[in-house]
Amino acid sequence: MAIGTDAAVVFEGSEHTAISDTSAISAGLFNADTPTAMTASEHLGAPNAVAKLSVALATAGVAGEFFTLFRVRSGGQTPDAAFPHEEVGVFPIDNGAGTGAQVIFADIRLVPGSQSFYLRNNTTYATTGTTVVTITPNTIGPKT
Picture 1: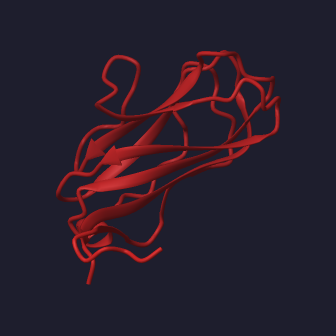
Picture 2: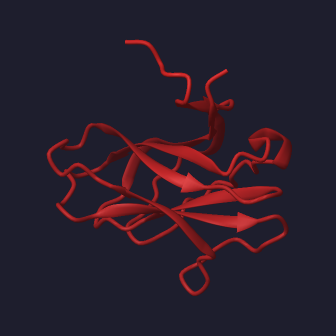
């Protein structure tokens, strides 16, 4: 099937590893490792992105549980339970996946300037292994 001349195309930027946390993220808490900031030059002004969470739970997930992705703009303080900053995405877990690794995607919006991302574990169990969140900026434009 040919793409029509009036079609829009999604353009993707380079994948950015925002979080790579080797320590367990306990239930109800944020990731402990310092995230890698995404600079304005890395997201190239793209308004949208796909966030990808790779995670494993110590015990099989429960229906309705999720992880939440928060953004901290340049110079902001680390989030905590009292001040989590801007919620930008939710990753619902697959309760049928057992304790194996899960890969979950969420569409998010980016903001101008540098930004960091933090992950909050809203499940009833700790994570195991390395938890990774990547951000891939994208935008929609005309077919060229």
